[in-house]
Every structure is written in C-alpha cells, then in structure tokens.
Amino acid sequence: DGGITQSPKYLFRKEGQNVTLSCEQNLNHDAMYWYRQDPGQGLRLIYYSQIVNDFQKGDIAEGYSVSREKKESFPLTVTSAQKNPTAFYLCASTAARGNTIYFGEGSWLTVV
Amino acid sequence: GESVGLHLPTLSVQEGDNSIINCAYSNSASDYFIWYKQESGKGPQFIIDIRSNMDKRQGQRVTVLLNKTVKHLSLQIAATQPGDSAVYFCAENMGYGKLTFGQGTILTVHP
Image 1 (tube, each protein chain N blue to C red):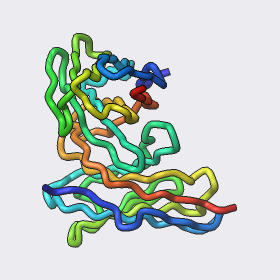
Image 2 (image 1 turned 180 degrees about the horizontal axis):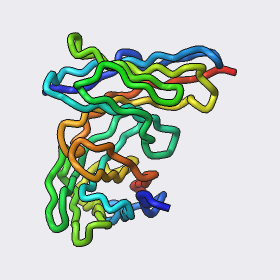
Image 3 (image 1 turned 90 degrees about the vertical axis):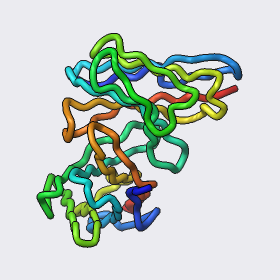
Image 4 (image 1 turned 30 degrees about the horizontal axis):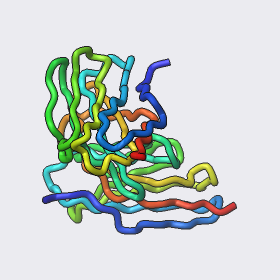
C-alpha cells in the first residue's frame, strides 16, 4: 500500500539524549515535512525538504535536525538542545507545490 | 503575523444533523485551503480542499465554502454520524507544504 510510515509509534527519551524519528514514504513525493503537535493545539512546522539533499527550517527548528539523503526518507532527530520535546510528531509529504499534503500516523515522544 | 484561526473550539450535534465548522483566515494572498480531520492519536486525514478561484466545492457528505471577501472558510458535513467525531482543522497552504493550521474545532456527535 502507498503511504507514509512513521516509526516508532511511541518513544521515550531520557533527558540529555538524542532520539531519531523515522519517516518513509513510497508515494514518490518530492517534498517532505515534519510537524509538531502539542495537546489541544494545531500543527507547527519544524523542517521541510523540497528535494533530496536539501532542507529548510520551519517555524520551530531549534533543537531539531534532519537529513534527506534519499527521496523516500526524511528522519528527524530530536536533540538534547530541545528543552521541551514531549509532543506528537507528524511527518507529511506532497508531490508538488499546491498539491494536497498527506500525513503519517504520527509518533509520540515522551521525556522521562 | 498572518494566521488561520477557527471561530468555535467545540461543536456538539445530534446524529443526523448537519454540522458547520467555521474558519477565518487573514492572509488575503492565500490561494489554497485544506480541511483535515484528526482522530485521537492519529495523523490528520485529508477531507477536502479548495482553491481561491472557487467559492464552493463538494465531496461525499462534505462541502467547503470559501468567502474571499470576508476571508472565511467553512466545512459543512451532511447527516453527521458518530464516526465524524474528531478534531477538524482548516489549513492554509502558504506554498510548498508550509501549512498554517488553526487551533482546531472538536466535533462531538451524539447518537
């Protein structure tokens, strides 16, 4: 089936640790995105990538890093510099500008 | 900065009623809007979209209306069902996936 796969679904992080969230899509979409969602809130853009080997900061990029070495993959690393990382993280992709954006099922990250 | 927002945070309806969820936007240059449905613990699910050269678009049981004069967007759900209970977001596509989301409206459908 075509779609966006995020893993893991649930992740616990100790303070001071870096963790990486995986996002894979088999839709052949050029652009991929990471959003953060806090309880009862809308989505905020962390990073996005329009093509392989290129990415740009979104509105809340501090404390996060990404890579785009392959078209189908856009992993997000939550670094120890992110002081409040507990949230629901959503990966998305789109074929082109102005096209519908599709989301994965999300990953819950909790700091313990 | 410019933003997209929602008028009502919660909406409760009876099964079979029609639901209307509203959204105001402030960026007059926006040309593409999307409605998403999000169930608890899941990613947003695309419902319907509309471009600024249209004022109405219909899908299956859903209709989106766009009033550019007052910068208002609405989602109408016909014959609302318990499975429609979720949070509904409108989003403004500011270019290549840079969506600006409203806070969301919680729709609760009572049997």
